[in-house]
Length: 293
Image (cartoon, rainbow, N blue to C red):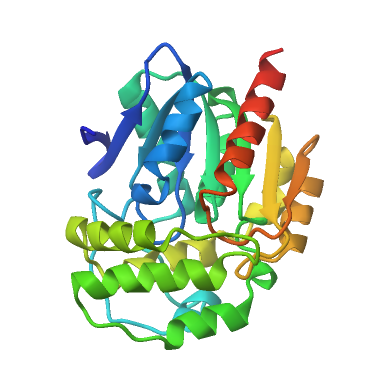
């Protein structure tokens, strides 16, 4: 695929598209630290087959998009719970990056699908410019900065693991992470995960980017209350075996957004796998088409 760049002030956002411009515009927004590669090509193509023109992008501080000033490495839990450090950018800035991609594509509005942190970014987009959001689908996420939603044991387990600073180790790390946070019924494609981990390392290796994005989450303290103002038709999808974000957080998100519909995926965790992709595509498509009708 051809990589394009959108601009939000001094920040460049790398993105790519799938399908014909005649399709329904759909923007995929990825989560913490991960690159747009975590939206599998096959997933994007399946959405295209259902009539969408799909765009995915690297958030700032990930992949081929602009990276910010490096800082000393810190414990992930300290970053998550500390109020002392001022983030280098805000959730609103990350939301405007998404709008910059839409502007570059000539999209006045689009369907938004956000995973994990990508859901919080999409929530912010829906609040900042409701007229630009046709529908909103939240995956693997709760109400933004709600810290009680996070399973601290999983965060600690992942934080304790150590990997060599090599391309090969980056592949093993992603495979380990997805295995840890995936659900009991999921068949994680480990070969795919290792390949994506290695490719992510080649595209951009930035060890402290995760803590800069985590700081953004920590400082979006008002988002859980503000989501009541979302007017876009909303679908909340969450696995009942998510080892990173509690199902109860997704339930609260669905309760707070007027008219939101909750879909619980049995045996699914905080990862996408080939066996659950068809159901996810089906739900996103049905949600978009129900609004069109």
